[in-house]
Image 1 (cartoon, rainbow, N blue to C red):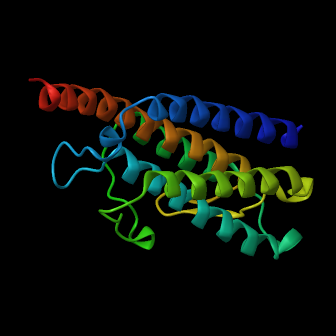
Image 2: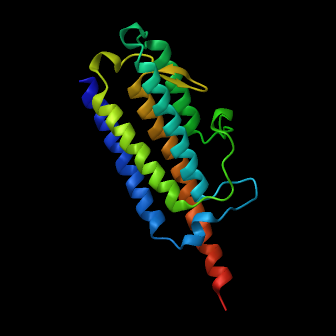
Image 3: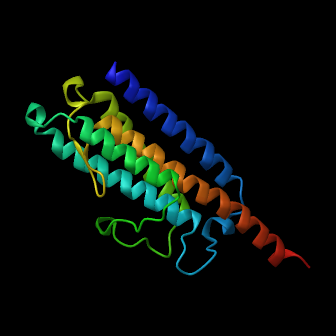
Length: 186
């Protein structure tokens, strides 16, 4: 039952990512690097951030899995912490990216970012598919603000995090397309 829910959550996450990337791919390449202000991120930078946060999380979970049955089970406290995190993301509250992620580079190659993100998604899928049932409800993930969560909560957070940034991407695509129309007009 837990594995089924986990797989469904992952599949939904990946389907949404593919749908967004399809919209992004249809845009002029210059739009992918458009920044509305110097301190704001471009589409390429947002994708990099999503990829990096997921990759670091996957690596952490793999390491924690070595603890096996000695890991504590998540309970109501983890549910409450995750719910607060979800509500915060839905409110569009602006978090600073955790320091552990480092700074997002200014000069990125969008294609490389997506290639790397595709690979980390394959790793996430493998992790989800091979996670032993007895570890699904264990504290295998540590969110910088919400604390220790289980794998299902982690993948659900990835969805919430993705949705939070997907709205930014859509706004940037629209603004970037309008900007390229203005600059390319005679």
